[in-house]
Image (cartoon, rainbow, N blue to C red; front, top):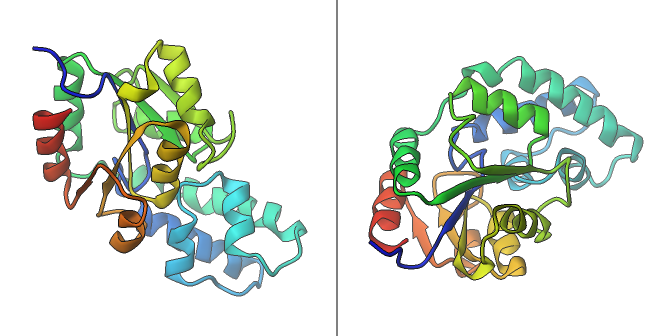
Length: 219
């Protein structure tokens, strides 16, 4: 059966496939506390999820001396590494990805994580071999720059017009728009629904089950 719209489906990682939003927020807050800096609110800390680590620390702590951004990143890595083994895929994600793979879609990940961090996380949840390509923030420009999607489509020989980016933040959806790809929002991650809707996604999924059903019927 011919595909309806897309050949390449690109997923964000944190907050979209893996349930890590609250852990990331707590690690950012713990990093600030370690350094005696003002502790960012949960709303502010969750807003920077999806960005590269350096960009995230600059945005979440704009009023501190720049030297603290690198130290914040260092403390964040320490806290996150101590907890990332606890993280799990959202219920239904594994089955959704398996079905999409069996239907011969190209599957990819575009994430603000580092290459080491993504590989460790993929391996922990046994998805390392399922994706055709992945791109991380320490390998190219951070979201919402279109480079990740441009590089993934080029690597896999795909057409941007038949590519969709799925994510839980406005960073993901703006990257899709900047690249000329479609964007789908998931409402169970880091950014408020109103912020996602402002980016005019093609579809907005309240749950993984909703996303799975929409992709089955429309992708």
